[in-house]
Image (cartoon, rainbow, N blue to C red; front, side):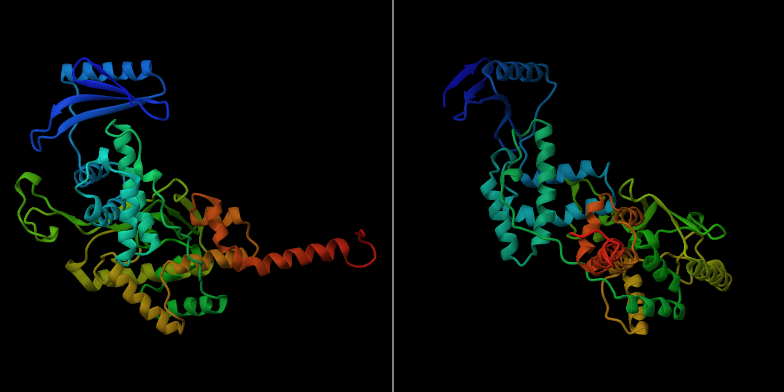
Length: 406
């Protein structure tokens, strides 16, 4: 590797692969005493020289002064910025992944992070008992953070993309059978807010989409429902500034804590915003729900919390995940079916529609899938139905004496 020193303590190097790299010094970090540098890369010496000169002009003009980020400090900074553009649940996922990343890589400076160290972090996570699905989620978080660092000029390339990740395959879908689905539908008639479960089963909604429904989204006379929002919990965060932490280990103990509670937020994608036709039986049950809700309001009196939620408790409050799952246990027991995830009602809806002969694209739009290929997860379940289609075509073209001979 040859080096050519340019003015202002900058360097231009030629890499073994023939490309060129430049480094510009921005002095030292007053907090750590480490050298602060910006790196650029190009295919020719001239291109890198021009980039280096641009950085030197920025440095001399005081336009930009990069910070020496460790993986831990950069993740914290990156997540804070992401709060402006993503949903609270997504931020919560980032924060859940962070301890696993920081435990192994936290003290490493991002410009020194190597693919081999990322792979070692994956191995540590698996050794700690994390599933391959969780490791892939951690990988997505770290890769997104490092990609932003590349975009902002702190890194030349994203080391996470160079690291091998454990192979992961989506688990098979295990929906309820048609008989079990019918028993669940009957059980919804025997419990409070049974329409909540019938809605998810009949329309294939996500849990948050059902719980986030408001009456303004539902037109019972015309038999339509519009899905635009979902209900999500927002985690509690420290409200005190980093420079003056309260010293409480848990955010909920912070006297200036922020966040917490349930919030109605827009659905994640454009495909998730959809308008669905309600089956007549579901319309009937939703009318009963609205009537029971009015009776609850009269009984609760001034304890009633005003809102427009479709599914509420006796005081007008929407259901959080804990209370929702408790009611789900009751439904499964009444129906005499094994308890699966509530999300499996969505899988069951998709399976029943496919078995009824609905096209994959129609089912995909109904469920709000962003990609029709997501429906392919149900292929092994509806293969018998597709065999019936093939048999019907055989009967139409080749049965008897009038069909073509092959």
